Length: 415
Image (cartoon, rainbow, N blue to C red):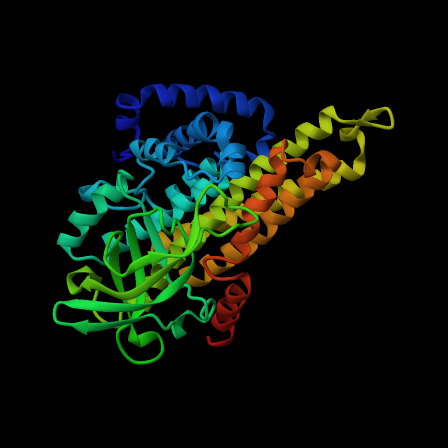
């Protein structure tokens, strides 16, 4: 079901909007105005932000710890989110998407991440895959694959990284040799979010020469002979989404499943990642926002040396710095999202800057919030430790932050 603005929200999902209004009103009573994430938004943006906050509070946060500890992939919850339009947020409406902007998407992922970063981060990858098919697929591909992805009847995974090619993605070795009307894939992908549990795999593979120009993009469906998966990885965080190797052994994929032309795969992959970097930075914003509020509440109730921690000027200043870092990160991410939506020349660099800055700063915020909790922050009964664990990987994936620095410096030096 597409999220098509206030009219749909008020009719089909009116109860969610009403609950969300109550939630936001309550939040505003306890959120200092300077970190209010709705500041500067349009009324429509505030409307679906409320829906996302409400969903995070009611459907995700109560289960966040259990999903983490038991490593549960919350399929039913994500399908509920898809009913609100969160399965294809920036996919076109004619194939079931919500047709929202990149800024709208950032706002939604930030709000959802206050309920569970790991689950929201997977949803952001799923959205990226759905958009890649929508943006680069032929009409038949769009009509075939996008509707079940937008409803989350089916789930998607992005397959670029390999055991021997992470940051140097253009050196990937998975081959796709054409044989009649099929490609025969051989190779493997590593660290694939959703791997083994998802239905659609958007795969970058080598159909031609070495380097970026020899890479193509194909859609591989679960159940295809020759497609298999490695063991489920044990991770520090992101435990509500499975991570496995995806393995191709003489895996025959129809040529009709190729997105774009041969040799366009690397371009398609990078176009997807530009939005993916905004998405993952937005997930970091949600974790940092929640952690600032957790730290603030803890300072008010925890006493040491006979008085609340909130009376300590050092901790007051530390909290102020955390809030400042949060707002600066949010502004940078939203500016980059606008640049990407407008397809500006500086969009790639701004997305890299936003991903670099926000993931670094938000991790520092969450880590500081844990420190403010003292020993309690290290207990799994307290949510702050899970925010720390879940967003640490954001500095690595969707292009490491070292690669973000390379992109930014090249832009400056090659002008």
